Image (tube, rainbow, N blue to C red; front, side, top):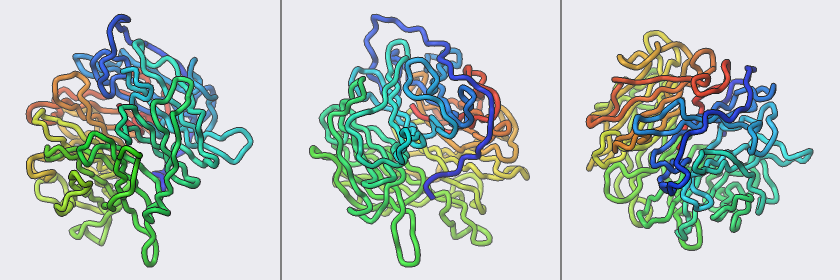
Length: 477
C-alpha cells in the first residue's frame, strides 16, 4: 500500500498569491526552522491537493499561514499553486500539487524554504514523472520557486513520492532526500541547492538491494545525537507468504547516509527526543496493526517507539502503544486507524517531546470515521499513556460537530507559532464539509494541549477556493 487513496472530484478555484505578510526589510532572517519570512515566528503549510486551479480538477494548491505573537494569523497568508506568478509549472488535472511537502533552508540564506514533491507531474511526452519544486522563503514570504533541474536521476517515476530535508553529511548545508519509485528508489540531493535549482551533487541508494526494505516513506531526524541528520525509510519487506511493512534507519555520516538497523514498520513516522536523553527516538504509526484486545480480530492501529542511542538504536525494548494501553483515552476498535498520522512537539514546555497521533477513522456517537487525535506525553521514562488526552469535534471547546467521514486527525502538526515555548496542535479533517476540508488549532499550555479557545478555519478563510479541495490534507512547517 503506497498511498492512502485520494478521492477524486471537481471544484472551483483560482491560483492566487494573496495577503503577503508585512515585514521589516532591514531585519536579518531569524534562521528559525519553519520560519519562511524570517520574522522569528514559525509558520505553517496547509495543503489542498484536490483544489481546482485554472479550471483543472485536482491540480492542487498550498496555503502558508504566518505565525505571530498571537499564534497563526489567517490574515497573514498566501495561496500558492502552479498558476501563481513566479512558481514553475502549469496546473494540470491530477497533479495533486501539495500532497507531498517538506521544509528546510536549502540555500542557506536563513529563511526556511518549502519543497513540494509533485510526484504525479508528467514530464512532456516521456514516461518520466515527478518534479521537485522549491518555494523560496524570504523577507516578504514566498515569492518565487524553482524546479530542481540538475542533477536528476536518469530514470524517474513518481519522483517526490516522499520528501525529507536534513544535513545528512554534517557539512552545515541542508540536503534533500526524495523517493523515486523507479530504481534506485532513494535519491539524495546534496546541499546547498541554488536558486537556479542546481544541487551540489546527487547520490542514489537502492534500499531494497541493501536491506530488503523498499523505499516508500522517509523521515529525517537526529537519532544518534551527533548533529547529523539520519533518515528513516519505511517500505515493504518480503517475508514467507507475502510482505510486511518495515523500517530501516540510515545513519548520517561525513560520507552520507549508510544503512543501519531495522525497526518496526508503518505508514507514518516522526523522530523526536521523547525522554530528553539527547537522542532522537523513532515513532512509527501502523494504522493497520492489530491489537490483541480488539474485538473480532480487527485492526485498530498502533504506534511503536524505538529509542535512539549514540550507535543508532538503544538496546531498550521498543514500546508499543494502542488505545488499549493504560492511560490512553478510548479503546482499540476495528478500523480506528490509530497512528494514521504523527507529529512531535513540546506541548507543555517541560523539555520533553510529546506525540500527537491521529485516529482518523474513529467512530464517535454513531458517526462513522468522524476521527480524533490523541496526544501522548513524553517523560523521563519515555512515551507512555500517562497524562494522554484525546480531542475531537465532540470535545467541549472544539468548534464544530463530529460527523461521519470528517476524518479529523487525518493530518496532525505540533508547532510553537506564537513563541511561548509550548507547541500548538493543528489537526486537519480532509473530509469536513463534503471534502472541502478544514483545520483546527488548539493551544499548548503548562498542562499540555487545551480545547479552550480552539479555532477552526477552512480554505476560503485564507483566500483559497470553496468546494472539494481536501484542505488540511498535509500539514508542515
